Amino acid sequence: MTQTTGESIVVEPAPAQLPQVSLPRLFWVFFYIGATSFGGGVIAYLREHLVSREKWLDESHFLAALEIGQTVPGLISTNVSVIVGSRLRGVMGSIAAAVGTTLPGAIVVFILGLLYTRFKGNPQVGAVLGGVGAAAVGLLLAVTIQIGRREIKKWQDWVILVPAFLLVGLFHISLVPVLVVLAPIAIQLNRPDQDEIAAYHEKRATYHAQLAEHHGKQAKHHFTVKGIRRHGHE
Amino acid sequence: MNKLISLVNVFALLSLLAVGGGTAVLPQMKHDTVTTHQWLTAEQFTDIYSLGQLAPGPNMNMVSVIGYHVAGMAGAVLVLLAFYVPSCTLVFAVGKFWDHFEGSPWRDAVQRGMAPITIGLMTSGVYAIGRTATIDIHRALSSNAITSAITIAVTVILLNRHINPALLILLGGAIGWFVLGTG
Image (tube, rainbow over all chains, first blue to last red; front, side):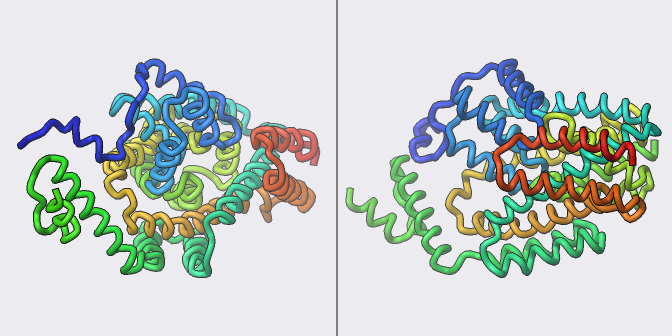
């Protein structure tokens, strides 16, 4: 009746063979990424090291982690580190990965901050930061345009994008009410149609029926007719 | 003490509001720290953001400098924790059951729906920093012309060439040193 959970892994899309990575090694690789990823594109460095060099996870798992990291609030690079760290070594792994990615930059910025406080009045420091700031705006703008080109596909997207910009950027409305109002509308505009939902439920029902079959149980009636028929054939 | 509590409140909330990355919360971060709490001037906020671009890793580590500016060492550490721990905890939890919704049409709807919000907020982030760094009415016309030229040049180069943005950031700093410093 009760089977070991080890067997049910067959029907789950869970990572098949996770590499054995020690915590210090995990921390070191993320620390190295955190210390060398100049210029903002930390995601590219994460992919290069985790997928190409260390081969700790394959491209599809990396993209899955990126998908979560982009959907959940927070910095995308830190989010991806948490997810990959957690896949490899659980809670401790996610802490090691997040601290590793963040710490080197945090220390460097902090030292720069101390220097900034000390040389605040110096016009040359102001001039350098003026140039850096203007270039940083160019970097932000280029990234925004690149993501926009990829993600904005239909006119309905503009109905959400423009108010988001106006409310937050121009009118300084707090993000909380803006998200509370805009997010449900945006999701509603992209809601799946009935066919998609039906197809998904059917797939899940089949999956559950197979799972029940796998456990040698009687397929329950709510696992849809298809599930029962499959079971009945045996 | 009150300042520390305010700092933690502000940055912990920002942590959970950063949909699609840190740029999304730049406008609110600027508004909270400059207008609401008056911890910094708009110029200082932009300077500190620029400092963050000179360091490796996530480009929002500069929040520690804001914390330091307001409340010293304790402020720096608390702001870093407040800004990272909430969102990291959330993503850890979501990562656990994300696979459960594999193939769910609603998961796709959430992702597709959040994309235009993210881009709208990123545009607000560009605007919030650009309003001081690229064009600032309090500066001389010649200085604005130079910063605008740098912003436009960096945007065009990055959209057309594969080049490490860090080089362009450093180049911007060098141009600032030689051109803006004398103006």
